[in-house]
Image (cartoon, rainbow, N blue to C red; front, side, top):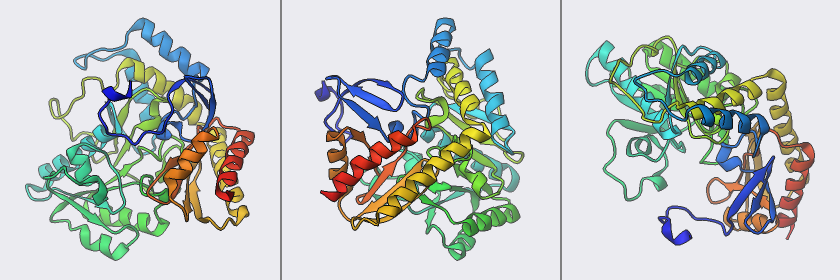
Length: 386
């Protein structure tokens, strides 16, 4: 079966057949504790009953309506999503995070073109960032390892060091820059939260220079860090927010949300997506927002994440050089290479992720219990002890 797939993934030797809660079972019936959520996608776990019911009920009604028309469930989802994201006024629904980021860049460029004329089209992003795998979102991604073999890239992107406020000040030239695209927590480069002072400076510079401040919340949004949007930790206002991954709990969907400045930039024919915001994804997304966007639920995500970090740091393990994160988005730097640890964890029934050569990444479902977290951490400790 594997021979028919293109060789795009370094796959671990397992084939899954079903899941329940925070557990997956392979085709032989062996169970695995899931600390990955399909890379932050299955935020409510596997087989979550309200999500299953919503998807099944909607599938029995209609799966898809062309975007020449509106449908009731997608309209309800859009309204609820805009209301959940403070400061946002309108949304474009897409299929994926890369597609959402493409939409954000298009909005920034058209906003600047219409207001200031040609030449003010650059998008500034950060070194260590990850914004997608299309040619344009690769162009926005500040990691050379993802660029190899795929040039030439879309012109007009500038990478700057994360955390360097002076470099940020120099880069945000109002004569040439349309937007700044940042992740509040950089996921693919090791779960690295941006500094408060840096985000505050970014918001100030962008507001003063009329540069759109855009937050890529594809991995860190939808409650992952203990607030509905990760940018809420900084108390700043975004012009654009992009979402995907956990937004529909496992059904593909992406979103570009725009605040007052950018909400009316797109006109009919400017952008589109055949499957974007289809009724099936919208029905699932309504469940996710209803469950996640509650203060008590978000507090539990934050509490569980803090507890995990406390446990990891209490070990004072010689093979752990750092443990950091926000909510249930946790990175653990180790002295060994990460991939062999992933293989050893799989053999012991634990699914974890990597983020670079020496960083382990944990993105468990929000529904995970303290006991299940302890069980997974116990497996990890045995591996590191060996």
